[in-house]
Length: 626
Image 1: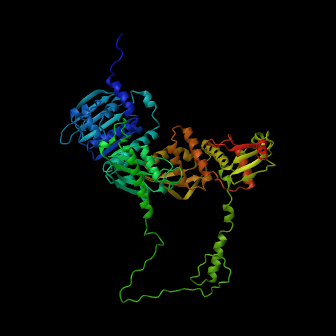
Image 2 (image 1 turned 180 degrees about the vertical axis):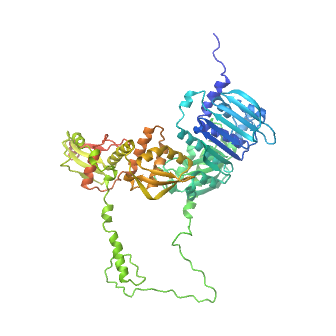
């Protein structure tokens, strides 16, 4: 029989290797920028077109390569960092396997221009799908310039499974953030379709965090600094009040390399035990310095998973360090000496100078037996007739507001003046015809300000009032988006938002649907946005909190299809604006809620799939009282 085992051609082997190393355009950015760091670069420029599908260009000012090194760099397992097996346990560079450039060249059209410092000429190499097209001398700048075009052009299946441009750009921004945080002394510029996303100068760690995530994060950073014989920890953690409901600002770095480590993440989470809001995650930017022989970074092709020799001890040190930092913060709160109403501490008098006696003011008209109209009246000065009249006038301004504040207006979810346009009374009657329920002769009871009870033919109907309102608002928002019926209410004082690059890209994705709902968000330059208009039916909500919640929730469930984006926004808005439990409803409001609910397409379940309506049978009642 003929032999059936053969060696794979280099082009096929490189494509297989690329499946592990090069997963998407962001992987190319990561590998090329890390190579630039290993080359001693102090500045890196990244140009992206069409989220990396068309072009990924990385330019650095490193030491460059000779013509031979430039050609050898594209060979598999060709590296300048490893000479023997023991070198794997003393690695302090970013790359060492020699797989990245070979994998990139196997799935893209690659052009390389490089020149060493002090040389007059550089080298130009053009590789297409692992096949060298051209190599020649070239006049180019010192350093290295990689241009990666048409990624996965020869693997259509891989290219087809790339996500939308906004999602792929988000992955690229995340990789740039990781490299920028690990190397704050490195100046990095990132451009997408000729628009500036980042222009980061060389700076320290704290300033780099602020440059990436906005000025607002500066007030919540708590420094961490712990030195032990096993591991040294430095960096910053976030205050508990700044915790967010999505992951995204959690970073571990070991010896200048970003890593993912769920075990250490639990150590940080437990250090915040009982001081975090529910279902939130703290921010942290922690840098570890350990002996390279005590870790193994060669367990994953992307080198983001790292094995520690003594993980248990490191876990306890990390937890203790974070707890110590939180404790110091609680014991030493910040003092703002510029705030209004600060304590006026008098200076010590000069020797021989006289100190004036304190002046005591009394009210000669004070009568302790007189019934006062206000318990907070000040008697440090005489009260005149005009003062008393003014006090009465001020109190008159608030008459009636207490009564109005207690009424929860369910009609906020209505965008039309004509209720019959979307309340189908006949549909409600038909829904409960078999149950013997008459809406005209309704009998509702609100139980614990949470459930609405009403008798039906087969027993007792129980309605969850918040979930019912969510369903009503959800279908209302969908109708608004589909029919462009939104009415925007302009804000007298537009809410200000400061968004990082990832949040800005998410806002771009959501822009069309937000405008259809009535949001008007204006970009005023750099990272600043102003919310100038919000949907009229959401005027009772905080505009900035609502937009931030939309962005944060969208991170947990990123979707690419326009229809899914529309439904997702309607879901989030309905959950944010629905009435809360504990709100007492009038009988008219209960009836309106009931009518609107059973005019919905799916009245039995909330938008998130939870039960709204349940019927307890008479048989179950009889079992309870036997």
